[in-house]
Image (cartoon, rainbow, N blue to C red):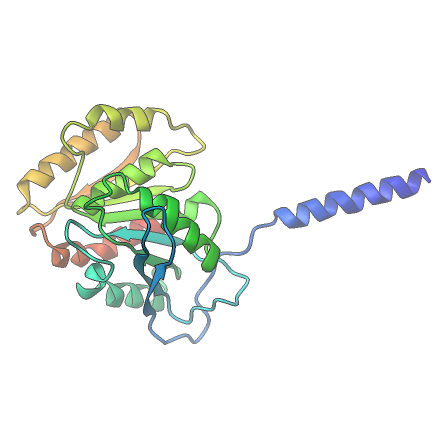
Length: 259
């Protein structure tokens, strides 16, 4: 009888261990040459009372039926932008080339609405992200969750990542930096992190965008002061998606270093 109890306990423990094994992260299939696809969809019901529109970039040879899971990048446009704004600027072609050449692993991009009337991006966090997690094969761990954005979308990116470091591992800030007057709150968010949820930050602002470059420098000084890993790049460019997309290869290589 005692042996039976021990055997039952071992079976139970083995079963628990098996359930805790995460799904493998997706890799590009051998022989894959097909480009990724961009689809439009919506969250039908949200707290704001009407649907939320988004677009999803599905990487080359994406399989929704696979047991593998994909990293995800939530990508936010600037003021007046829409879910297709980044892709209209050519981002899909950049990502296709990098994945097909195996410079980075396959991943999903979820392009959001703007946050013009939702300054803290609450709808993205409370409505869009749970919908994506339920309907797409997304990796569950924070290491494979990132947010990036341009201009006001870059501010949304850091607000989401800094407030919810247990959900996201990094922020990409293009053409933006620490919004004036929010420096103390940023410092508080960052100092609340510990070794289990500390984030990484990438910034890129053109030298022809002096106001935003100044704010990016302010952000870098805050990040450096509290020991947050960060990178600030400034090249020849202005406050445009064309400039930001031209440097997205640099950003994606930085992002994938942690995958």
